[in-house]
Image 1 (tube, rainbow, N blue to C red):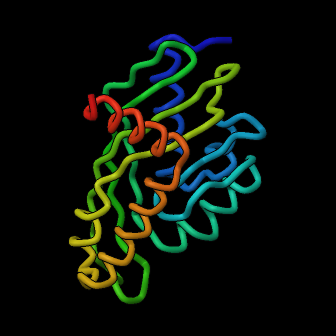
Image 2 (cartoon, rainbow, N blue to C red):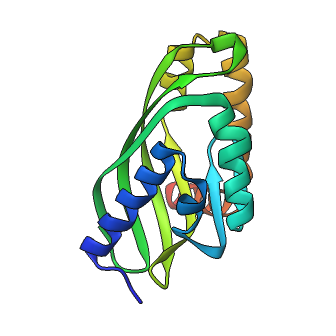
Length: 168
């Protein structure tokens, strides 16, 4: 089953509602059994059990009063993209009680009407400023993200091809 625009929008509304309402089982049911949820903070989690564990024991441990909504979803039935806004109140002791607003772009690989892969690009610097994260700690995290981006085979291939184009 390939999702059309309306089906994809409905799946994302369900995903956001489950995340916002604390329904880990419902959230995980939006994914294929072997799906990967690649969170920009907590990293990749494969399979519904791991996704539930990430939500319950990492995300909701650190974030309260959470709300997540998707906008402008588009899909070709195999891949989908959507803009998102989310907000939460930090439960992390160093940042306790601080409200954060995050914008992002989410990408989805779809299979049989469910999410087989989820990844995101999030404006994490804005979130960290809202929390009051110290500049040195932000720099350390940004360097790690940069190293991860530059370490991907896809990124290395792209940079090599771009350099070859400019070398002509």
